[in-house]
Length: 252
Length: 294
Image (cartoon, rainbow over all chains, first blue to last red; front, side, top):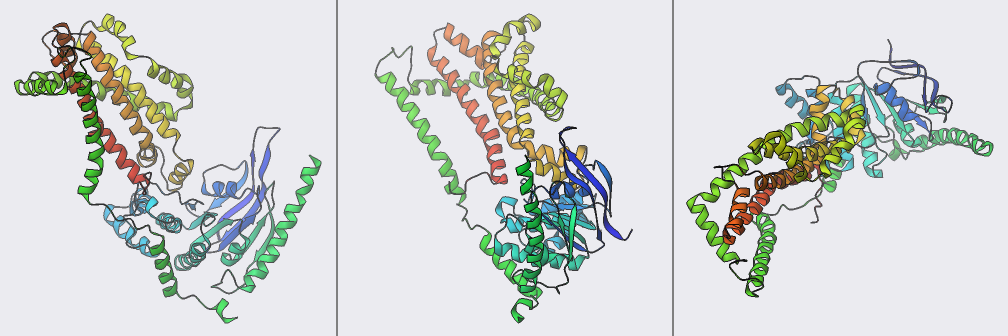
Protein backbone atom coordinates (compact mmCIF):
# COMPACT_ATOMS: atom_id res chain seq x y z
CA UNK A 1 0.00 0.00 0.00
CA UNK A 2 1.51 3.29 -1.01
CA UNK A 3 -1.22 5.35 0.57
CA UNK A 4 -1.37 6.02 4.27
CA UNK A 5 -5.11 6.59 4.08
CA UNK A 6 -7.34 5.16 1.38
CA UNK A 7 -11.02 6.06 1.33
CA UNK A 8 -13.07 4.37 -1.39
CA UNK A 9 -16.71 5.23 -2.05
CA UNK A 10 -17.59 5.76 1.59
CA UNK A 11 -21.14 6.72 2.50
CA UNK A 12 -22.65 7.46 5.85
CA UNK A 13 -26.27 8.25 6.51
CA UNK A 14 -27.90 9.60 9.63
CA UNK A 15 -31.45 9.42 10.74
CA UNK A 16 -34.13 6.76 10.26
CA UNK A 17 -34.65 5.02 6.92
CA UNK A 18 -36.85 7.13 4.69
CA UNK A 19 -36.05 10.41 6.46
CA UNK A 20 -32.30 9.90 6.40
CA UNK A 21 -29.72 12.42 5.24
CA UNK A 22 -26.38 11.65 3.72
CA UNK A 23 -23.52 12.97 5.80
CA UNK A 24 -21.14 11.49 3.26
CA UNK A 25 -22.04 10.20 -0.18
CA UNK A 26 -19.57 7.91 -1.95
CA UNK A 27 -16.59 10.00 -0.96
CA UNK A 28 -13.19 8.88 -2.23
CA UNK A 29 -9.82 10.29 -1.36
CA UNK A 30 -6.35 9.13 -0.54
CA UNK A 31 -3.43 10.49 1.38
CA UNK A 32 0.12 9.49 0.50
CA UNK A 33 2.58 8.40 3.11
CA UNK A 34 4.14 11.45 4.72
CA UNK A 35 1.73 13.80 3.01
CA UNK A 36 -0.03 16.71 4.72
CA UNK A 37 -3.57 16.93 3.37
CA UNK A 38 -6.08 19.54 4.47
CA UNK A 39 -9.84 19.15 4.10
CA UNK A 40 -11.92 22.28 4.00
CA UNK A 41 -15.65 22.61 3.68
CA UNK A 42 -18.62 24.63 4.80
CA UNK A 43 -21.04 23.39 7.45
CA UNK A 44 -22.65 20.06 6.74
CA UNK A 45 -19.80 18.62 4.69
CA UNK A 46 -19.32 15.74 7.12
CA UNK A 47 -15.71 16.59 8.01
CA UNK A 48 -16.01 15.32 11.53
CA UNK A 49 -17.97 12.26 10.42
CA UNK A 50 -15.19 11.42 7.99
CA UNK A 51 -12.47 11.70 10.64
CA UNK A 52 -14.47 9.56 13.04
CA UNK A 53 -14.72 6.90 10.35
CA UNK A 54 -11.00 7.03 9.60
CA UNK A 55 -10.22 6.92 13.33
CA UNK A 56 -12.38 3.81 13.65
CA UNK A 57 -14.80 5.44 16.09
CA UNK A 58 -17.66 4.78 13.71
CA UNK A 59 -18.40 2.40 10.84
CA UNK A 60 -19.16 3.49 7.30
CA UNK A 61 -22.55 2.58 5.84
CA UNK A 62 -20.89 1.66 2.55
CA UNK A 63 -17.42 1.74 1.04
CA UNK A 64 -13.99 0.95 2.36
CA UNK A 65 -11.43 2.70 4.46
CA UNK A 66 -7.86 1.52 4.74
CA UNK A 67 -5.50 3.18 7.16
CA UNK A 68 -1.84 2.44 7.77
CA UNK A 69 -1.71 1.38 11.42
CA UNK A 70 -3.86 2.82 14.13
CA UNK A 71 -4.41 6.55 13.59
CA UNK A 72 -4.23 9.18 16.32
CA UNK A 73 -6.87 11.88 16.53
CA UNK A 74 -6.60 15.43 17.82
CA UNK A 75 -9.85 17.13 18.75
CA UNK A 76 -10.79 20.79 18.70
CA UNK A 77 -10.70 20.82 22.48
CA UNK A 78 -7.54 19.08 23.63
CA UNK A 79 -9.54 16.28 25.31
CA UNK A 80 -6.86 15.76 27.91
CA UNK A 81 -7.92 13.81 30.98
CA UNK A 82 -8.39 16.49 33.64
CA UNK A 83 -7.38 14.18 36.50
CA UNK A 84 -3.96 13.46 35.01
CA UNK A 85 -0.92 15.71 34.75
CA UNK A 86 0.47 16.52 31.31
CA UNK A 87 3.10 13.83 31.81
CA UNK A 88 0.59 11.18 32.80
CA UNK A 89 -1.72 12.08 29.94
CA UNK A 90 1.13 11.39 27.54
CA UNK A 91 2.17 8.35 29.58
CA UNK A 92 -1.31 6.85 29.37
CA UNK A 93 -1.01 6.50 25.60
CA UNK A 94 2.18 4.51 26.21
CA UNK A 95 0.68 2.55 29.05
CA UNK A 96 -2.21 1.42 26.88
CA UNK A 97 0.39 0.18 24.41
CA UNK A 98 2.02 -1.79 27.25
CA UNK A 99 5.27 0.16 27.21
CA UNK A 100 7.37 -0.62 30.30
CA UNK A 101 7.49 1.93 33.10
CA UNK A 102 11.14 2.81 32.62
CA UNK A 103 10.80 3.27 28.90
CA UNK A 104 7.65 5.31 29.47
CA UNK A 105 9.44 7.88 31.57
CA UNK A 106 12.13 8.33 28.92
CA UNK A 107 9.66 8.55 26.09
CA UNK A 108 7.49 11.09 27.95
CA UNK A 109 10.53 13.32 28.46
CA UNK A 110 11.38 13.10 24.78
CA UNK A 111 7.84 13.95 23.76
CA UNK A 112 7.64 16.88 26.15
CA UNK A 113 10.79 18.11 24.50
CA UNK A 114 9.29 17.60 21.03
CA UNK A 115 6.44 19.96 21.87
CA UNK A 116 8.77 22.24 23.88
CA UNK A 117 6.97 21.75 27.17
CA UNK A 118 9.85 20.59 29.34
CA UNK A 119 9.16 21.74 32.86
CA UNK A 120 5.40 21.63 32.46
CA UNK A 121 5.04 17.87 32.82
CA UNK A 122 3.65 18.04 36.34
CA UNK A 123 0.94 20.54 35.47
CA UNK A 124 -2.66 19.52 35.17
CA UNK A 125 -4.62 20.51 32.06
CA UNK A 126 -6.43 23.37 33.80
CA UNK A 127 -3.09 24.89 34.74
CA UNK A 128 -2.08 25.15 31.08
CA UNK A 129 -3.20 27.54 28.36
CA UNK A 130 -5.29 26.36 25.41
CA UNK A 131 -2.25 26.24 23.13
CA UNK A 132 -0.20 24.31 25.65
CA UNK A 133 -3.02 21.82 26.11
CA UNK A 134 -3.10 21.22 22.36
CA UNK A 135 0.64 20.62 22.39
CA UNK A 136 0.25 18.09 25.20
CA UNK A 137 -2.51 16.45 23.14
CA UNK A 138 -0.12 16.41 20.17
CA UNK A 139 2.56 14.77 22.30
CA UNK A 140 0.00 12.23 23.51
CA UNK A 141 -0.96 11.49 19.91
CA UNK A 142 2.69 11.05 18.97
CA UNK A 143 3.08 8.67 21.93
CA UNK A 144 0.75 6.32 20.08
CA UNK A 145 3.62 5.77 17.60
CA UNK A 146 1.12 6.26 14.89
CA UNK A 147 1.85 6.72 11.21
CA UNK A 148 -1.28 8.76 10.63
CA UNK A 149 -2.33 11.82 12.54
CA UNK A 150 -5.91 13.02 12.12
CA UNK A 151 -6.69 16.55 13.25
CA UNK A 152 -10.22 17.88 13.69
CA UNK A 153 -10.01 21.70 13.69
CA UNK A 154 -7.37 21.48 16.41
CA UNK A 155 -6.55 25.18 16.45
CA UNK A 156 -10.10 26.47 16.01
CA UNK A 157 -10.46 27.68 19.58
CA UNK A 158 -7.06 29.35 19.90
CA UNK A 159 -6.11 33.00 19.68
CA UNK A 160 -4.37 34.21 16.53
CA UNK A 161 -0.78 34.38 17.76
CA UNK A 162 -0.96 31.00 19.47
CA UNK A 163 -2.41 29.49 16.32
CA UNK A 164 0.34 31.04 14.27
CA UNK A 165 3.03 29.51 16.46
CA UNK A 166 1.28 26.15 16.50
CA UNK A 167 1.25 26.13 12.70
CA UNK A 168 5.04 26.38 12.81
CA UNK A 169 5.11 23.75 15.53
CA UNK A 170 2.95 21.17 13.75
CA UNK A 171 4.92 21.75 10.57
CA UNK A 172 8.17 21.10 12.41
CA UNK A 173 6.84 17.94 14.07
CA UNK A 174 5.52 16.73 10.72
CA UNK A 175 8.92 17.35 9.07
CA UNK A 176 10.86 15.73 11.92
CA UNK A 177 8.71 12.62 12.21
CA UNK A 178 7.65 12.09 8.59
CA UNK A 179 4.14 11.36 9.83
CA UNK A 180 1.08 11.52 7.55
CA UNK A 181 -1.42 14.25 8.45
CA UNK A 182 -5.08 14.55 7.54
CA UNK A 183 -6.15 17.94 8.80
CA UNK A 184 -9.74 19.17 8.84
CA UNK A 185 -10.44 22.87 9.15
CA UNK A 186 -12.93 25.51 8.08
CA UNK A 187 -10.14 28.06 7.93
CA UNK A 188 -9.03 28.20 4.29
CA UNK A 189 -5.85 30.18 4.95
CA UNK A 190 -4.80 27.70 7.58
CA UNK A 191 -5.35 24.89 5.09
CA UNK A 192 -3.23 26.60 2.43
CA UNK A 193 -0.57 27.53 5.00
CA UNK A 194 -0.15 23.89 6.08
CA UNK A 195 -1.22 21.50 3.33
CA UNK A 196 0.59 19.80 0.48
CA UNK A 197 -2.89 19.49 -0.95
CA UNK A 198 -6.16 21.13 -0.04
CA UNK A 199 -9.35 19.19 -0.74
CA UNK A 200 -12.62 21.09 -0.85
CA UNK A 201 -15.66 19.14 0.28
CA UNK A 202 -19.19 19.78 -0.89
CA UNK A 203 -21.95 20.04 1.67
CA UNK A 204 -24.93 17.72 2.12
CA UNK A 205 -23.82 15.27 0.99
CA UNK A 206 -20.09 15.56 1.51
CA UNK A 207 -17.89 14.69 -1.46
CA UNK A 208 -14.56 15.92 -2.71
CA UNK A 209 -15.46 18.59 -5.26
CA UNK A 210 -12.13 20.27 -5.86
CA UNK A 211 -8.49 19.63 -5.23
CA UNK A 212 -5.76 22.27 -4.93
CA UNK A 213 -2.14 21.13 -4.86
CA UNK A 214 -0.23 23.79 -2.93
CA UNK A 215 3.14 24.39 -4.49
CA UNK A 216 4.24 27.32 -2.37
CA UNK A 217 7.69 26.65 -0.88
CA UNK A 218 7.89 25.86 2.82
CA UNK A 219 8.11 27.29 5.34
CA UNK A 220 5.11 29.41 4.53
CA UNK A 221 3.56 32.24 6.41
CA UNK A 222 -0.12 32.75 6.95
CA UNK A 223 0.10 36.37 5.86
CA UNK A 224 2.20 35.85 2.72
CA UNK A 225 0.64 37.03 -0.57
CA UNK A 226 1.17 33.60 -2.19
CA UNK A 227 -0.87 31.92 0.54
CA UNK A 228 -3.49 34.66 0.31
CA UNK A 229 -3.80 34.22 -3.48
CA UNK A 230 -4.40 30.47 -3.33
CA UNK A 231 -6.70 30.91 -0.34
CA UNK A 232 -8.79 33.35 -2.38
CA UNK A 233 -9.25 30.73 -5.10
CA UNK A 234 -10.25 28.07 -2.60
CA UNK A 235 -12.62 30.45 -0.85
CA UNK A 236 -14.29 31.33 -4.15
CA UNK A 237 -14.89 27.63 -4.77
CA UNK A 238 -16.40 27.24 -1.30
CA UNK A 239 -18.64 30.27 -1.71
CA UNK A 240 -19.94 28.88 -4.93
CA UNK A 241 -20.88 25.73 -3.06
CA UNK A 242 -22.60 27.71 -0.31
CA UNK A 243 -24.56 29.70 -2.95
CA UNK A 244 -25.75 26.44 -4.47
CA UNK A 245 -27.54 25.66 -1.21
CA UNK A 246 -29.47 28.93 -1.22
CA UNK A 247 -31.84 27.14 -3.62
CA UNK A 248 -32.42 24.36 -1.08
CA UNK A 249 -34.24 26.81 1.12
CA UNK A 250 -36.32 28.28 -1.61
CA UNK A 251 -37.49 24.86 -2.68
CA UNK A 252 -38.45 23.97 0.86
CA UNK B 1 9.01 40.26 -0.24
CA UNK B 2 11.87 38.93 1.82
CA UNK B 3 10.14 39.22 5.19
CA UNK B 4 7.23 36.99 4.27
CA UNK B 5 9.31 34.19 2.82
CA UNK B 6 12.08 34.34 5.39
CA UNK B 7 12.64 30.97 6.94
CA UNK B 8 11.53 31.12 10.57
CA UNK B 9 14.42 29.27 12.13
CA UNK B 10 13.81 26.68 14.79
CA UNK B 11 15.51 28.65 17.54
CA UNK B 12 13.19 31.61 17.00
CA UNK B 13 10.14 29.37 17.22
CA UNK B 14 11.40 27.87 20.48
CA UNK B 15 11.92 31.30 21.99
CA UNK B 16 8.50 32.47 20.85
CA UNK B 17 6.77 29.38 22.22
CA UNK B 18 8.59 29.73 25.53
CA UNK B 19 7.64 33.41 25.68
CA UNK B 20 3.99 32.68 25.02
CA UNK B 21 3.97 29.87 27.58
CA UNK B 22 5.45 32.16 30.20
CA UNK B 23 2.75 34.75 29.47
CA UNK B 24 -0.03 32.20 29.45
CA UNK B 25 0.67 30.38 32.69
CA UNK B 26 -1.23 32.00 35.52
CA UNK B 27 0.90 33.15 38.40
CA UNK B 28 -0.84 32.72 41.72
CA UNK B 29 1.32 32.80 44.84
CA UNK B 30 0.42 29.82 47.00
CA UNK B 31 -0.61 30.88 50.50
CA UNK B 32 1.49 29.48 53.36
CA UNK B 33 0.07 26.32 54.98
CA UNK B 34 -0.44 28.09 58.30
CA UNK B 35 -2.43 30.83 56.64
CA UNK B 36 -4.53 28.33 54.74
CA UNK B 37 -5.29 26.31 57.87
CA UNK B 38 -6.35 29.49 59.65
CA UNK B 39 -8.53 30.51 56.70
CA UNK B 40 -10.33 27.17 56.99
CA UNK B 41 -10.42 27.11 60.79
CA UNK B 42 -11.68 30.52 61.80
CA UNK B 43 -15.14 30.43 60.16
CA UNK B 44 -15.76 27.00 61.70
CA UNK B 45 -14.65 28.17 65.14
CA UNK B 46 -16.76 31.28 64.86
CA UNK B 47 -19.84 29.24 63.89
CA UNK B 48 -19.34 26.87 66.84
CA UNK B 49 -18.85 29.85 69.14
CA UNK B 50 -22.05 31.52 67.96
CA UNK B 51 -23.98 28.28 68.37
CA UNK B 52 -22.86 27.85 71.99
CA UNK B 53 -23.63 31.47 72.69
CA UNK B 54 -27.19 31.05 71.37
CA UNK B 55 -27.64 27.87 73.37
CA UNK B 56 -26.35 29.52 76.52
CA UNK B 57 -28.61 32.53 75.89
CA UNK B 58 -31.67 30.30 75.75
CA UNK B 59 -30.60 28.74 79.07
CA UNK B 60 -30.03 32.20 80.61
CA UNK B 61 -33.49 33.29 79.53
CA UNK B 62 -34.94 30.47 81.70
CA UNK B 63 -37.28 29.36 78.95
CA UNK B 64 -37.10 25.88 80.49
CA UNK B 65 -35.68 24.95 83.91
CA UNK B 66 -32.02 24.05 83.67
CA UNK B 67 -32.54 20.41 84.74
CA UNK B 68 -34.61 20.00 81.55
CA UNK B 69 -32.45 22.10 79.22
CA UNK B 70 -28.93 22.27 80.65
CA UNK B 71 -26.37 24.74 79.29
CA UNK B 72 -23.31 23.83 77.22
CA UNK B 73 -20.92 23.98 80.15
CA UNK B 74 -22.82 21.39 82.14
CA UNK B 75 -23.11 19.18 79.06
CA UNK B 76 -19.40 19.37 78.31
CA UNK B 77 -18.53 18.58 81.91
CA UNK B 78 -20.72 15.51 81.62
CA UNK B 79 -19.15 14.60 78.32
CA UNK B 80 -15.66 14.92 79.74
CA UNK B 81 -16.67 12.77 82.68
CA UNK B 82 -18.13 10.12 80.33
CA UNK B 83 -15.00 10.16 78.21
CA UNK B 84 -12.85 9.60 81.29
CA UNK B 85 -15.04 6.78 82.56
CA UNK B 86 -15.16 5.29 79.05
CA UNK B 87 -18.94 4.88 78.85
CA UNK B 88 -19.43 7.18 75.90
CA UNK B 89 -16.37 5.83 74.13
CA UNK B 90 -17.67 2.29 74.35
CA UNK B 91 -21.07 3.37 73.06
CA UNK B 92 -19.56 5.43 70.23
CA UNK B 93 -17.20 2.57 69.40
CA UNK B 94 -20.08 0.13 68.92
CA UNK B 95 -22.07 2.61 66.90
CA UNK B 96 -19.09 3.45 64.68
CA UNK B 97 -18.37 -0.23 64.15
CA UNK B 98 -21.90 -0.72 62.85
CA UNK B 99 -21.58 2.39 60.74
CA UNK B 100 -18.36 1.14 59.16
CA UNK B 101 -19.76 -2.33 58.46
CA UNK B 102 -23.08 -1.07 57.09
CA UNK B 103 -21.47 1.64 55.03
CA UNK B 104 -18.83 -0.73 53.72
CA UNK B 105 -21.45 -3.18 52.45
CA UNK B 106 -23.54 -0.32 51.04
CA UNK B 107 -20.45 0.97 49.28
CA UNK B 108 -19.87 -2.38 47.61
CA UNK B 109 -23.48 -2.91 46.58
CA UNK B 110 -24.14 0.73 45.62
CA UNK B 111 -21.00 1.00 43.50
CA UNK B 112 -21.56 -2.26 41.66
CA UNK B 113 -25.24 -1.67 40.98
CA UNK B 114 -24.60 2.00 40.11
CA UNK B 115 -21.89 1.20 37.58
CA UNK B 116 -23.96 -1.57 36.01
CA UNK B 117 -27.02 0.67 35.69
CA UNK B 118 -24.97 3.57 34.36
CA UNK B 119 -23.48 1.48 31.56
CA UNK B 120 -26.43 -0.70 30.59
CA UNK B 121 -29.48 0.72 28.85
CA UNK B 122 -31.65 -2.24 29.77
CA UNK B 123 -30.76 -2.11 33.45
CA UNK B 124 -31.29 1.63 33.51
CA UNK B 125 -34.77 1.33 32.05
CA UNK B 126 -35.52 -1.50 34.44
CA UNK B 127 -34.30 -0.18 37.78
CA UNK B 128 -32.97 3.35 37.22
CA UNK B 129 -36.00 5.13 38.63
CA UNK B 130 -36.43 2.49 41.32
CA UNK B 131 -33.08 3.50 42.79
CA UNK B 132 -34.24 7.09 43.12
CA UNK B 133 -37.51 5.82 44.58
CA UNK B 134 -35.60 3.84 47.20
CA UNK B 135 -33.55 6.89 47.99
CA UNK B 136 -36.60 9.04 48.67
CA UNK B 137 -38.17 6.40 50.91
CA UNK B 138 -37.69 7.37 54.59
CA UNK B 139 -35.41 4.72 56.03
CA UNK B 140 -37.38 4.55 59.23
CA UNK B 141 -40.23 3.08 57.20
CA UNK B 142 -38.12 -0.03 56.66
CA UNK B 143 -37.75 -0.87 60.36
CA UNK B 144 -41.01 -2.72 60.92
CA UNK B 145 -40.11 -5.04 58.05
CA UNK B 146 -36.51 -5.31 59.21
CA UNK B 147 -37.60 -6.33 62.69
CA UNK B 148 -40.02 -8.87 61.28
CA UNK B 149 -37.30 -10.33 59.04
CA UNK B 150 -34.29 -10.22 61.34
CA UNK B 151 -35.71 -9.75 64.84
CA UNK B 152 -34.28 -7.30 67.37
CA UNK B 153 -30.77 -7.92 66.21
CA UNK B 154 -27.74 -6.21 64.80
CA UNK B 155 -28.64 -7.44 61.30
CA UNK B 156 -31.95 -5.55 61.35
CA UNK B 157 -30.05 -2.31 61.91
CA UNK B 158 -27.48 -3.13 59.22
CA UNK B 159 -30.22 -4.01 56.76
CA UNK B 160 -31.73 -0.57 57.07
CA UNK B 161 -28.38 1.23 57.06
CA UNK B 162 -27.51 -0.49 53.78
CA UNK B 163 -30.90 0.31 52.28
CA UNK B 164 -30.40 3.93 53.28
CA UNK B 165 -26.89 4.38 51.94
CA UNK B 166 -26.63 2.12 48.88
CA UNK B 167 -29.16 3.96 46.63
CA UNK B 168 -27.44 7.30 47.30
CA UNK B 169 -24.08 5.81 46.37
CA UNK B 170 -25.52 4.14 43.27
CA UNK B 171 -27.16 7.37 42.17
CA UNK B 172 -23.91 9.24 42.70
CA UNK B 173 -22.01 6.91 40.41
CA UNK B 174 -24.80 7.05 37.78
CA UNK B 175 -24.72 10.86 37.79
CA UNK B 176 -20.94 10.77 37.64
CA UNK B 177 -20.90 8.50 34.59
CA UNK B 178 -23.69 10.49 32.89
CA UNK B 179 -21.66 13.67 33.20
CA UNK B 180 -18.49 12.34 31.60
CA UNK B 181 -17.83 14.55 28.56
CA UNK B 182 -18.25 12.31 25.47
CA UNK B 183 -14.99 13.65 24.03
CA UNK B 184 -13.06 12.01 26.88
CA UNK B 185 -14.61 8.64 26.08
CA UNK B 186 -13.70 9.14 22.42
CA UNK B 187 -10.18 10.18 23.37
CA UNK B 188 -9.87 7.02 25.43
CA UNK B 189 -10.95 4.87 22.51
CA UNK B 190 -8.55 6.60 20.14
CA UNK B 191 -5.74 5.94 22.62
CA UNK B 192 -6.62 2.27 22.53
CA UNK B 193 -8.56 1.83 25.76
CA UNK B 194 -11.09 -0.96 25.50
CA UNK B 195 -13.04 -3.20 27.83
CA UNK B 196 -11.59 -3.18 31.33
CA UNK B 197 -8.95 -0.60 30.56
CA UNK B 198 -11.68 1.87 29.58
CA UNK B 199 -13.10 1.52 33.08
CA UNK B 200 -9.75 1.67 34.78
CA UNK B 201 -8.26 4.61 32.92
CA UNK B 202 -11.26 6.59 31.74
CA UNK B 203 -14.69 5.87 33.20
CA UNK B 204 -13.83 5.40 36.86
CA UNK B 205 -11.53 8.42 37.24
CA UNK B 206 -13.87 10.54 35.12
CA UNK B 207 -16.93 9.77 37.25
CA UNK B 208 -15.22 10.54 40.57
CA UNK B 209 -16.74 13.99 41.15
CA UNK B 210 -20.29 12.61 41.02
CA UNK B 211 -19.27 9.46 42.84
CA UNK B 212 -17.80 11.35 45.77
CA UNK B 213 -20.97 13.43 46.06
CA UNK B 214 -22.90 10.14 46.23
CA UNK B 215 -20.52 8.70 48.83
CA UNK B 216 -21.01 11.78 50.96
CA UNK B 217 -24.75 11.62 50.71
CA UNK B 218 -24.63 7.90 51.36
CA UNK B 219 -22.75 8.50 54.59
CA UNK B 220 -25.37 11.03 55.71
CA UNK B 221 -28.13 8.50 55.02
CA UNK B 222 -26.21 5.70 56.71
CA UNK B 223 -25.56 7.70 59.87
CA UNK B 224 -29.19 8.82 60.10
CA UNK B 225 -30.57 5.34 59.55
CA UNK B 226 -28.12 3.88 62.01
CA UNK B 227 -29.22 6.14 64.88
CA UNK B 228 -32.88 5.64 64.08
CA UNK B 229 -32.14 1.92 64.16
CA UNK B 230 -30.35 2.05 67.48
CA UNK B 231 -33.29 3.88 69.02
CA UNK B 232 -35.76 1.29 67.76
CA UNK B 233 -33.80 -1.92 67.90
CA UNK B 234 -32.31 -2.06 71.35
CA UNK B 235 -29.89 -4.90 71.82
CA UNK B 236 -29.24 -6.03 75.37
CA UNK B 237 -25.77 -5.56 76.88
CA UNK B 238 -24.49 -3.71 73.89
CA UNK B 239 -24.23 0.01 74.63
CA UNK B 240 -24.47 2.35 71.67
CA UNK B 241 -25.15 6.03 71.10
CA UNK B 242 -28.76 5.35 70.19
CA UNK B 243 -29.27 3.24 73.31
CA UNK B 244 -27.73 6.01 75.41
CA UNK B 245 -30.12 8.54 73.92
CA UNK B 246 -33.09 6.37 74.66
CA UNK B 247 -32.04 5.36 78.21
CA UNK B 248 -31.01 8.82 79.33
CA UNK B 249 -34.33 10.19 78.19
CA UNK B 250 -36.22 7.48 80.07
CA UNK B 251 -34.12 8.10 83.20
CA UNK B 252 -34.59 11.87 82.99
CA UNK B 253 -30.84 12.32 82.71
CA UNK B 254 -31.04 15.19 80.24
CA UNK B 255 -27.44 16.31 80.66
CA UNK B 256 -26.26 12.90 79.50
CA UNK B 257 -28.86 12.90 76.73
CA UNK B 258 -27.51 16.16 75.34
CA UNK B 259 -23.96 14.86 75.74
CA UNK B 260 -24.91 11.89 73.53
CA UNK B 261 -26.46 14.24 70.99
CA UNK B 262 -23.34 16.37 70.88
CA UNK B 263 -21.28 13.23 70.33
CA UNK B 264 -23.51 12.13 67.44
CA UNK B 265 -23.26 15.53 65.82
CA UNK B 266 -19.51 15.79 66.27
CA UNK B 267 -18.92 12.33 64.77
CA UNK B 268 -21.05 13.27 61.76
CA UNK B 269 -19.07 16.45 61.19
CA UNK B 270 -15.67 14.85 61.77
CA UNK B 271 -16.31 11.93 59.42
CA UNK B 272 -17.50 14.29 56.73
CA UNK B 273 -14.59 16.69 57.03
CA UNK B 274 -11.89 14.03 57.49
CA UNK B 275 -13.03 11.80 54.63
CA UNK B 276 -15.54 13.26 52.24
CA UNK B 277 -14.99 17.01 52.29
CA UNK B 278 -11.24 16.49 51.95
CA UNK B 279 -11.63 13.99 49.12
CA UNK B 280 -14.08 16.28 47.36
CA UNK B 281 -11.77 19.30 47.69
CA UNK B 282 -8.82 17.32 46.37
CA UNK B 283 -10.81 16.29 43.29
CA UNK B 284 -12.07 19.78 42.63
CA UNK B 285 -8.57 21.15 42.88
CA UNK B 286 -7.19 18.49 40.55
CA UNK B 287 -9.84 19.14 37.95
CA UNK B 288 -9.44 22.89 38.23
CA UNK B 289 -12.98 23.38 39.52
CA UNK B 290 -11.86 25.76 42.25
CA UNK B 291 -12.16 29.44 41.47
CA UNK B 292 -8.67 30.76 42.02
CA UNK B 293 -10.07 34.14 42.98
CA UNK B 294 -11.81 32.75 46.04
